[in-house]
Length: 480
Image 1 (cartoon, rainbow, N blue to C red):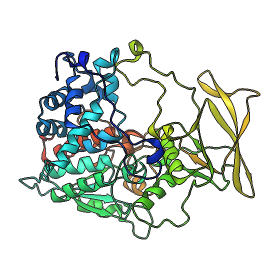
Image 2 (cartoon, one colour):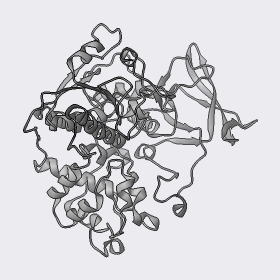
Image 3 (cartoon, rainbow, N blue to C red):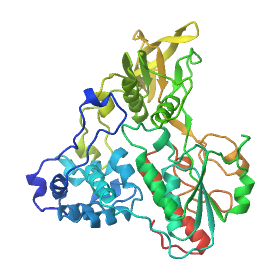
Image 4 (tube, rainbow, N blue to C red):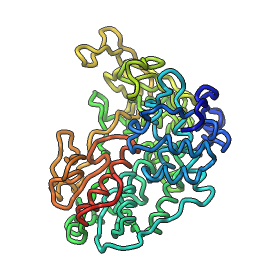
């Protein structure tokens, strides 16, 4: 568990990042992983705390103290093996996970948490740089065929686990390339798409087949009939996203220049990848207002600044949180506190406890927002009388989260039961874990749990794979 006195000797070190003034001029990643010496020092801070709350704070239950100790002892390759034992894609989570493990770190009670995410980032990058990450094809094939519908992190994790168990796996993805929101939502400056591509190459070498550019179900001309999958495969995993965005039902919503965040972000990601996007939504020279204070809103801020926005304002309905949490009250749980992202550092005016009352326009296009200060009354956000003001806007981006999977024919044709939120109904425990109401059809990730983190998607994909393997073979040796 690192050096016994390391947490007393060494301070937490943040990964180096390119200055905001220069990084806003490009779409490349700008955070550097730790050097071997830095990683060793940071791993030395992992204390012998007795009960490693970080393990349970991490949705995939990473065995964090073990790989911290291995890094401290200069055994990065062994650390990588431990890391991969619980997480198929630490190169994803080491870059974009918000690190709930660090919130749960025992050292976080009264000091800076161990830099778990930065150490994970170091370990997996060492793996790629040294050629330690290689395909792991199954030695024996089972003859069973599994269809994975949705090529995001949940689907990819399930596909890799099932292929390594010996099943013939086909991933169906409606977009031209797999990755889900990793590819078409998260900006390249936070997550370069080459990380997906090399994992896809690894999985293809392990026997996974990818069929892209065609939706499953629905009435599109190139849609794959649901009945074909039911007839051809021994099991089906539904691992699409919760892509239906939360809308803003206020007067003026129909005006030109008001867009959902994912329209804006996905277009820019396609442009960075070299695709032509006719009529691209651009923030260049515009007064941008982002409605929604979460990660998606932050991504809109960073992208707007890179496109050359005249100004960026971000609105959040909830009150401004405290600068730091009440640790005795919240530890080891995820705390409510003020979070300033790298995109905020690049330039953004943030307004808290503000609700949009009306979108104002001229000649069919947005020109301003009429907003009001908000107070919570009985748990309900309520406008404060006389607090209204106007914010000029040429482009409004709605980044208020997602509510459910999109109903595009797949779920209806399969006939799977849905929960009250519109997600696919399936439990995560017991004999029927991850099974839907339809025989041999399973569900995992955002399609089952609703909008969530990449690390939760990987967890559910892995756990679902074990249940599918047990369903097909009678038992499973895959980890849960």
